[in-house]
Image (cartoon, rainbow, N blue to C red; front, side, top):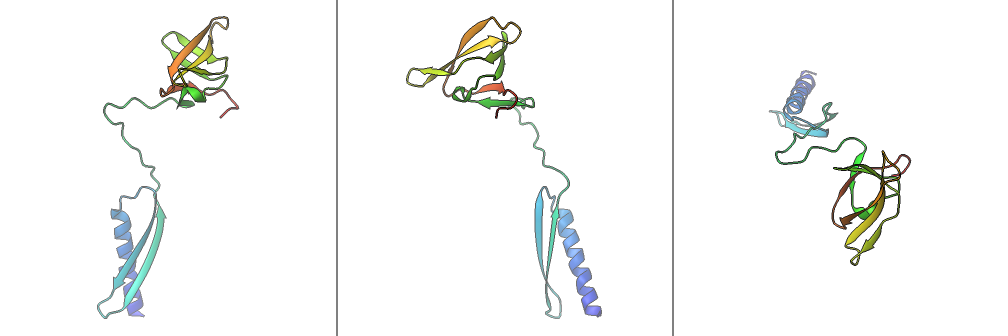
Length: 139
C-alpha cells in the first residue's frame, strides 16, 4: 500500500511539473514513464487544454490586420455587390468581370456608393489582390 501511494505521489508530482513547465498553448497529451528504485515501471498519461489562445505579436514592417468582414481576393473572384474603398471613395461592383490581354488584366464596372449614378471601369492585374467587403448572404 505504501509503495502504491508513493508511486502515485511521484507520478502526480512529475505530471504537474511537466504541465507547469510546458508553457502550453493548445491541446497537449503528456506521457510520463517512471521507473522506481526497486525496478517497478509506471506509465501515466495526462491530457489537458490550455485556456489561453496563442497571440502572435505584430511583426515590424507588416501591414495592419484587415478590419472584420474584409477579405483580400484576386480580381477574378469579384462578385456583384462586393464593396471596395480607394482614395476616391467607396465603390460597389455592379457588373461582371471581363479580362483582356489573355486574362492578365481584369476589368469590372463599379459605381459610387454615395452617388449611384457615377460609374467607372476599374482595372487590375490578374495577380493583384483587392481588399473587399463581401455583400451579405454571399460567401
